[in-house]
Length: 233
Image (cartoon, rainbow, N blue to C red; front, side, top):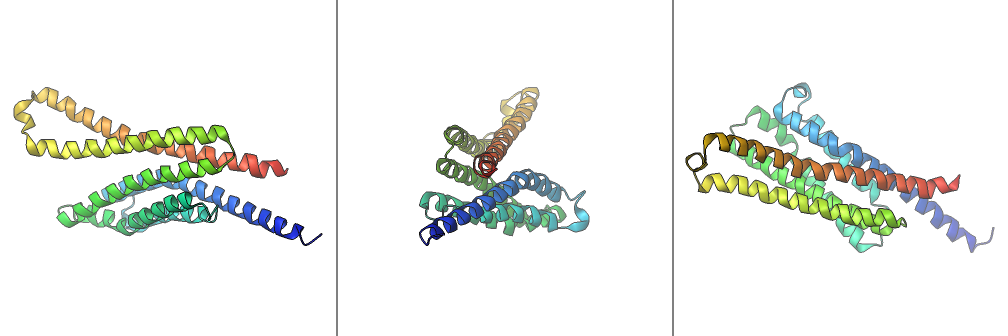
């Protein structure tokens, strides 16, 4: 083996290692996203997870951070990719730091400070999902699959718009009742159905981007495994 071949072999080995960590990171994100939603919601209700306190919320948020850190070895020289990944990591750290307040809020829900922190945590979680879609967009742009690149670009844009609509809808839901006495302006039966429609809209605008993001993560991971590692057999 000549010396000129050694750098190529070394670079190929480094690329395969980074792709392997990238695939593991995507797997951690795929399982961590729904787990964090379920566990954090259950921690705030303090029912099934009461005996173990703040630990479950910390674990699932740490899993998301682990996934992002695993992805960090891939294409370190690409500045847009690195910037998007760093923003997602920062928001992941914020989520991890604030997650214990879910348990404390469930113990003392009357405390205004805990309510404010939970609001910040929800906002941070939405921004995390928003930035995670930017990460997937940048990742898709670096992979050789043209179909994946187009789908990632289109669906991450859709997800970000849905999340922006969610934020606007929540802001309107908070502001309008403060500005107007809806019970005096709207028939009680109509108001009842409007409140249920509001909940349905919030669920759709929040859960649809989560589901689409998980589908994109899974397809990206499978593309990496099929096109890179599968070609070696």
